[in-house]
Length: 101
Image (cartoon, rainbow, N blue to C red; front, side, top):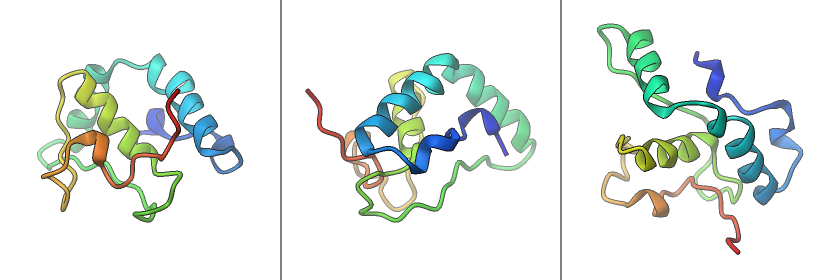
């Protein structure tokens, strides 16, 4: 388990916009995506690394794994979503549905 990407205890008590804002500010903005990938590859060893969660498709809150995939993509690191490889990351079914200003 890679705890550096785990959401904080507030994750189940805030609305979607707050979740998105806080996850990015309190988790992702403090990490280097290339180092995270190196860590995950090291953890996987000779196996294929997988980033997973258990959120339902269609939940408007989405999941933090989808946010991590977008974060990786912004750094030029592509993370395919099994079953949704044909979709661009901004149309990923588990990206939180936030209202952008």
